Image 1: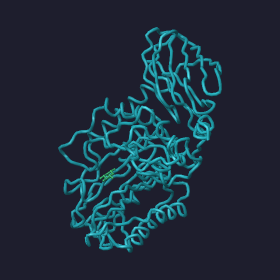
Image 2: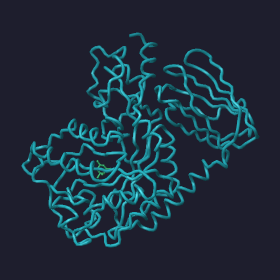
Image 3: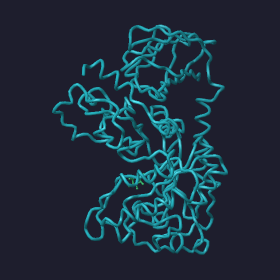
Image 4: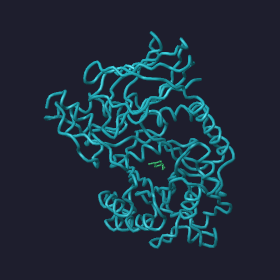
Length: 447
Ligand code: FUL
């Protein structure tokens, strides 16, 4: 296929409705909570005494309020982490809340959290770790039945779930064997019981890992990626012009050029999977009393790098042993919400009129006449990704001076700018695109 045709097909790789809905959520919370919260570990051993889990002051409504104060739209709870301890009374193991002193073994954190989310009007989802250091089945084919039984409990007893999260972590089983996860079966179960939920795995099908836990993203964050990387995504194109005899076995989800032309040219097919940026508000995923929440500057920068860079932001807040959030985290979340509102609230929007000029098929410019002379601070661009992600690169001018040079737009690109001229005229020049530019929205925010 010739390059032009190939790029056009690459620029028409489409998301599913569930992927579009996930993109619209944009910003949601992880909650890491298990026996680790009581042992001060990050990865539990699997042999913890169930009696150590005692969130005597659990208040999931407080979690929801804190999460909402930052503007987050949902919670993903670690129903089971690598230690195998279940936050709900699973019928398939004794290693759960049912053997904890909390509520005399009648407690269910998953239920309390799901109900609090429903009361607070936000979404609820779960993380069910495939790696299980407690289960006697781990390392045998029976483990997949065990995992599916637990998954079914979660999928059928807690109402609508918006996001199901599982990683590829895979330690040695007790019998010394490595577990082979039957991901196809897990995915089929989720599709059966929660067809609207997006599935996060390091390699898709719906949402892929960005490749790090530090809150950074790529200069070009494409949702259109080789199926060699996202091997559970539906293939939507033919092979790239250099795919013949190409070796894609090197590809990893932390590579810098995923989705770039230098990468997709060699692919056998492309599919759609947006990146999720997962990061904890503190250094650890679980609560450690000696750790402090990250600065508001770091959180805000991560927000721009994720929500503002064609990805979603999954920010973890770990509860304390009491079951409450640390007041320092609650305060930081509130400040974070205020900072976001201060930058992107309606009061910061500048009205304008726009004219579009097409230079050719794949290059065009948008001329914006602002209603007022404004000290512009952010320009937010959004492509209509329901038709595919297309923009490769662009420039922004304030009067005659270039104030921003960027790659990829996708669902949302927030460009921090300094408009030195304080002018009432901006130009957005799309310097390269894979297919005709379909701009959904341009928003201008003043300082
Ligand atoms: C990783 C896990 O190993 C970490 O403990 C944490 O849960 C992180 C979000 O995912 O795969």
